[in-house]
Length: 177
Image (cartoon, rainbow, N blue to C red; front, side):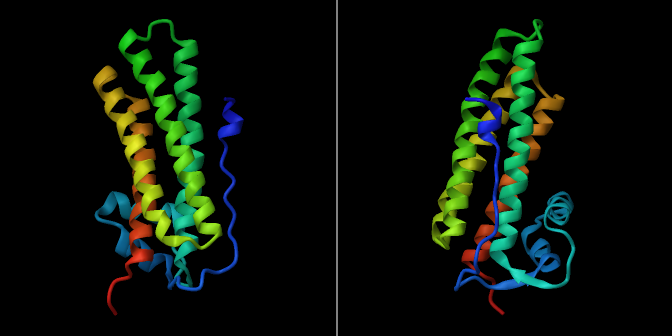
């Protein structure tokens, strides 16, 4: 499969009837479990105080994760093709990661379909699949290479996927007023 075939194109659709609205600021306050995730959320969703349907925030997180998956997958392929000094263990990890990233891509494509059709409860299946696939890759790379720039990219992808999951949980289970 070519890398361009793995590209993500997520667009917004009509409003979903049951989706609540809130500002990006409030969404990040609720989704962020610490300073790092709050910063990632603000960078992904922006800092507008204007209320928007929460599905737009889930969509923004899915877009950011999808774009990052493509970038990371390109780096994995470049590493495998361009580095003769890569250990056999790292080559195996990268090969497995390619499959993990295809699984994460499929999960995000499913999330897109569920967002555009307002099948919101299905999102709670899609985002954990993506988080799990990317986290599995991170574990393989960490075991093969230890802390590295590639590992850090993969952890960034996992964090974006996790942001999407946290926003999905907020969408499906709004906090009491």
